[in-house]
Image 1 (cartoon, rainbow, N blue to C red):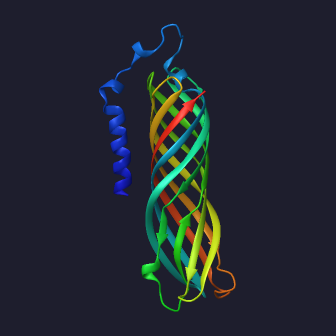
Image 2 (image 1 turned 90 degrees about the horizontal axis):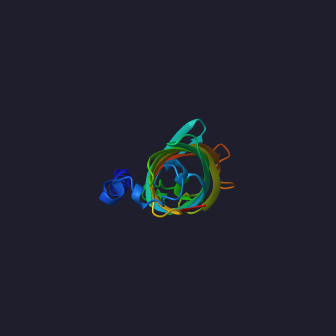
Image 3 (image 1 turned 135 degrees about the horizontal axis):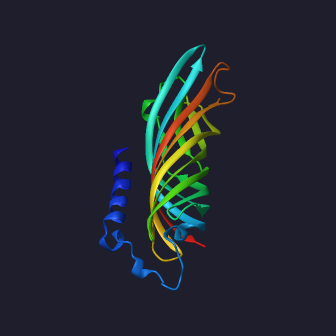
Length: 236
């Protein structure tokens, strides 16, 4: 988790701390164009993103009223993209909607803590997740915007289980709430770069490894994620 915060903080400091970027840059705007600061961040945008993904997962199994919990974490690279549309409300504030699809190499590996002759969750891999939500932005100057976003993320994952001899695979998904904060900086009138920190908490997803675990064995997977993302995009 410290790594995630460090990456996000360092990127924001670089964006805000550059002398060339800290000023309003009014002299860089074409004086023949009647453009208020907020209008430079409105309209349709598409972007590609890469970053760091940190997963916390808990596998909960119940057998005959006995609860067995397995907890673990994993980190990896996140990647994907989004499309959205923003509408100015005032000369400083805008709102928008966004749809994003992201993959990840992060995984929870429990192979070092398996119990012999007992069925365990051995590995959880993240599959593509889909985010849909809205955001509110505040324009600091003609080239810089800070924003917050919130919405729903559908988390697809693959779960692998084993008892030492039988190895099974289960696919499932869970939906959770994602919130994030970010800083966006225009490069040109149609391109931008941004850094963003996201936190997602997922609800419990119930599943069972079919045909090889007791009928009374029910599994739940709960999780949350933290992501630090760097994006490059275009506005139209």
